[in-house]
Length: 256
Length: 256
DNA sequence: CGTCTAATTGAGATGAATCAACAATCGTGG
DNA sequence: CCACGATTGTTGATTCATCTCAATTAGACG
Image (cartoon, rainbow over the protein chains, first blue to last red):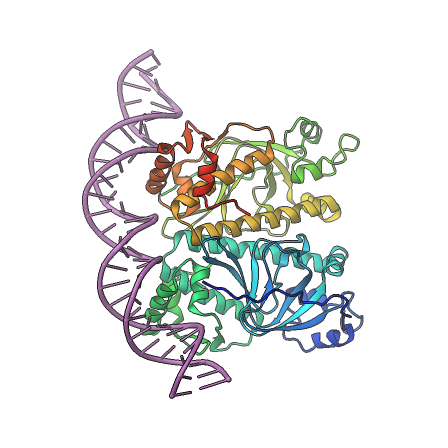
């Protein structure tokens, strides 16, 4: 099944010197400047230097960023690109738990945990902001804003999980796919409030299937139907919602 | 479908005087004394009075303890009995997200949220420990142990959600039911380390079905098979695991 | 171009849902 | 203590959504 044999390497090499000057200046132009943790992080800029050094790191699609149950070494935040969190079952099946979009931590629970039970893999080329784990925890422990931001993020993630449970437990395949598309669209819009007619949609049908508890073949059929009915257009990694109202209907109303 | 028409009343009446003396002394004999938040709460006992007043409250099966999207008024912790968290879909279907066992908060995210998207209903008669919401938040904000405890609890809940996503997305009905039973058993054991051959199992087949994304009819068949094969015994609200190894096999190995 | 991966399409199998009837259990009041 | 209605669980027959297997086409990329 999905076998990428690459070995996970630490994102931040041992003994690497955090390039805080360079990293620090980058935040100023970052479109995520005001989003969630980044807002807390850049709060005192440009007057004070950030208390927490940051390092940039680029990764390549299909690269394994973390393997389930290994000790987590650093804290990584997505600056550009997408990744996904997944668990591999003994029978070779894969369940994707969630996708990491720009502004997300790869593993938010690193705040409290040294290990998690899922793995993380890059879906596109990515640029990550990497923090030292202990420094990050110390920072969160003493900075009230950072702490609140992490609490907010973890609870938001739990709410997403719960929404997904409802999808998997009680909705049919068309409903699931429609909601998936709409959710992704609105998440992207929250991060970049400029309204785009279309968004980047780098996941393959296999990813959608593994996230929604379906088969790639079945996802193909559902997307085919959506296209045929003029609800969406999806090609070359770009998605556009053509008939939002009817897609909403198929999705069984708003999510909340 | 599941229509209990009772109106949710605040667990703690307006203006009620917290009976802190009485409540305080009760913790000493509570079997949950050393479990999670309770451990943090009773940490300074019996030398100092608890900083956070507590009130006992009893409720009755099927009673609605919280309705989705209403403002949360108090913080409630289960002392005895069970409840479940669920969402009701427009089509009348119900998805149970999780069960609240002794020692659990009904709504852990009350630490940060004033509202959540699921409802909570008592499954058995319950005894609850109720805190004032603002006092609780103030307490958590200033007590490092309480804070860590809440972080631990919220992240643990997220991990449970993720495990459930894997179940719903990628496992068949027998696997789901077997895991459900084993998980419940081990949760009960964590709370009461005394080894019992059987545990209280108050949920109806409809609850199991709504938790696992199945039908009550199908759950009946699966449980029937389990009984026939001598894996479990389940009657009169009491469950015993007879053949743990084979049940584990059906469940597709350990959960982690 | 040729090769590899991803997507489409069809035919048939299957696990779980649905529909329906019935049996067992529980709680309650007489 | 029994009789009753209400709730819960069991079982069979049938249907349906989704999976599986398999063959084919379309894209991506050197």
